[in-house]
Image 1 (cartoon, one colour):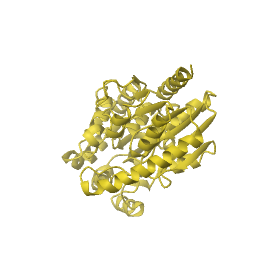
Image 2 (cartoon, helix red, strand yellow; image 1 turned 90 degrees about the vertical axis):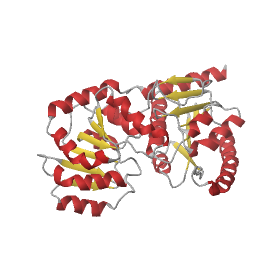
Image 3 (cartoon, rainbow, N blue to C red; image 1 turned 180 degrees about the horizontal axis):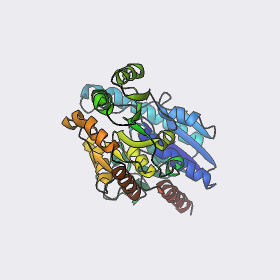
Length: 357
């Protein structure tokens, strides 16, 4: 089976698609893998590190709903992207095209529809994004992470698989590590970094606390490391961490934004967490993502506003309560869907077989 992936922009879109490809490959069901994405995005790095994936560069940009004067240029670029996507589909000749949302998926999936190639859409969040809502109307299969996902079109052919998580994450030991892992998503979060620096005097009082802080593009790692060291916090500050499973394996507690893939991987690893949903996320979907874990007792939620000022005290109290952390870890694992990649792969195989008959 030849699978063309259309995914990019953030790790949250990229890694679920990669988990599905890995599962298909492990099953021996993959005869060819292609990936369409931005040549400077995280998707290009991920695909090019794997020689078995053929990468097709295609620049794309979203429509800024708050800046209507930019719409004509965005639409013109989308039209050009569609022509390029049509060429890619003709050249690669996929049996199915898998899109995981965002503007990177739009043109390739429309091109697949024009060529009557089966389409699968995967939605990570508890609230469906605009691109996936539109694409779900032409998709043959819609894979959902949550049974309560909001915004799914009525006629969409949907099934709940969970958010596909990489096998190296699901295989982690349930034994908690000895680090505080702080991560603001693949692009980083300046607000979260600033909150951690502000909380440093409190964190320095937590016995044995060591931190790994992933800043992404949000802040200079060296400056943040210096500020934490001056406050007495033992910290490793990095721009990016790969493999993420290694960072999770060392984590005793995670503080993170609540992007769907981060939430899914933290839960699958069985790590207690304080999630800080980003208020700027469309439809406040990060709040919905975090609630899905919080309702089972696997995490706490700190709001993006005044609660961030008290983040240090909250983390320090959790850090010192090993029994509570173990209960949260067990609760996180209980609500996780570690078999999501397997379920998604099986659904895609069934779709292709159905279309062949």
